Length: 371
Image 1 (cartoon, rainbow, N blue to C red):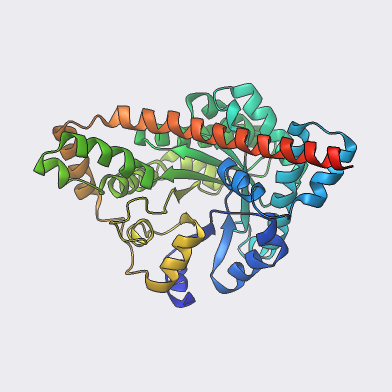
Image 2: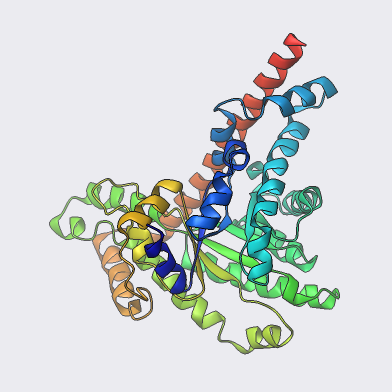
């Protein structure tokens, strides 16, 4: 079953798992995925942690100790999440060493309630970096307008960053510029650029979900014919922008100083529409030097019946541009789509964070009552 995943990896796609939990770590499941399924990285987000905390008893002992110590829920949440991330980093450390730091990365997100606050996002990024204390950590920072400056300042301190919640091509260009600025400042600050890594998480399936909803509302035959193609077109044009930006003299100067490129990462690659092939956002986004972070169901589907047939991104740019133009002609406002998606993304992660905090509060209260 792993042959398909090996072919995907051989095409230059780093396979990351979009999930982490104490059970997955404790049972050796993550280590098995690294060994048998070519998984070379892990991403997490508030929704993933909220789900992990709501199931089973894996966190009971730690929560009990936190309750005895009388810590508040904010400190408890950091203790619980960073414990899992630290453990995950240790599981992936051999991959990190083997790939000279390219892969073997594990991501943890700053409190999403801070997404519109530059200074607090940067401060939280530093705190998480110190708490986890592993070189193969990525700090996830949302690509909001306010997040851009936090991305630059965090990189300038030598901290590796996973930029998340990117939906628009314009914002992706700004993210790359923030990356360049961060590395330029890091160099001025005396940091070794070869030790700083970054990925830019460009979301895919959510674009189709929002645009298809609008196309269905328009209702014409022409509109219906455009369904479920925007996510791929948007991502392919993002890769075109990546090639353009990382072909500039500005990047060459950084590369000559030892910097590594900020790799595109395809996020939200689980198919939302049951009428679509469940490996669509993997098979159709194969290109050199990218990351695809998948929920386990998508990873299993790709291993079972994925269709890896070489590069499916480069060479498709004209078709992608034509599709985006057709969407505009049909009445789909791209700028409004990506604005809505960014706002909803921040709100959803903030809601999941609250759900996680509420769950921890309930567990702490129960342990204190039973003490």
